[in-house]
Amino acid sequence: MKNKNSNPFKIFMSFRLFPFLQLILFLQFSNLNALVVHEWGTFTTLLTSEGKPLSGLYVDESRLPSFVYEIPGFSWSEVKGWPSPELLKNVTVKMETPVLYFYSDKQKDVSVKVGFKGGSISQWYPQRTSGESIALPPTVDFAKGYQGSIGWNCTILPPESKKELTHIGNGITSEWEAPRWTQSNLIKNSDGDIEKYLFYRGIGNFELPLKVRMLDTNRIEVHNAGKDSIAYAMIFETKWGMVNHWSSIARIWWQGPIAGNTKMEFKRNSSMIFSEVELSRALVQNGLYKPEANAMLQTWRNSYFQSEKGLKVLWIVPRPFVDSLLPLSITPKPDSLQRVLVGRTDILTPEYEQTLRAMVSMSELKNNKYYFAFQDFLNKDKRTTAMRRINNAMPSLPEKVEMPFRMDGKYFHK
Image 1 (cartoon, rainbow, N blue to C red):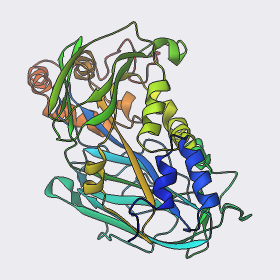
Image 2: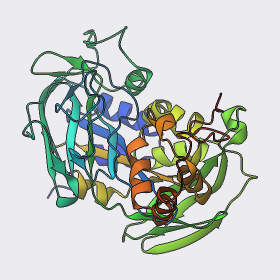
Image 3: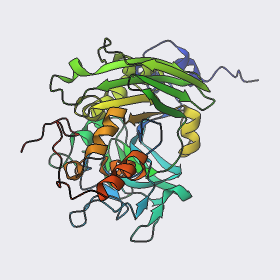
């Protein structure tokens, strides 16, 4: 009778070694022709101070290279700009930059299929073999439910491959380049395009397990409404209008795990200076190799921690939730599959909401990725509705109110 513990892969992975060293040892000394697959990505939401999700979140976090494929009408165009909220309704979640890495000691053909329960996989690279189709122009109300999908038939090239990436140099953004900084194999699709990873991105409407709301200007409540523990969460804030180096102005309110079905309350903490150390460690502890964790942080460092001011919660989405929301099928079945998706919850503080209410003109925010979400807030906000009723009964007001600072932290100039 075969010993159930004789599997060389399980033996190697049980050693207390650095994760990437485990991979090297296993691929070098085993005869199993192993396949290891890792994935990381982000779910972004924007909440009011009361914890209500805002819609209109289909504006790209960062502009993708022109060679990335997409469903027409879902992103920015030179002619029409951003799609109308009347075409893409009730988009409350952005799924940003999931990338799939493949590790194998030999060349291998693979079939990859990803589903998306509650959203559309609207952008991808390299070209897909299968996936959802939408009548044009797209008119989708994501609140009514949606089922997206994508599939690739690809070849994992051997580690010693000297093939070049299909796209290099001009047109490659830093956000596209950073995920390449790993030791993963090159992968080639049926059209011959070569990249370091499979990329997909989408938008949708679904509930995430972490709920967040402000109790007042200095207190926040986080509620893990799911049964599975959140391995790591970090609440941090950067102040509007401050121009010092980011590491000196970002402050961590709290960081740590959150058990399932648990509410926790935290006060504003201005003494804990921001650091990526614990977040990076958590990404590795939950399955990523160190170079992958570094690539993820480098990809989103600017928008997570540097240029964008405000209150955020970063948290690792429980794996059972990820597998249910984004069912992933890979043939042949990987010997090891790790999926580390990070939730990014942006919160409008009460002060921030008051700034929005005071704005008579939204023109200053037209290039902000949350422009449509800010409009959604004002349309639903009871205080704004009351103020508009009063203004409509009064004599005409100036077209623009000069505010002390803009939403991007810069000062207005007359």
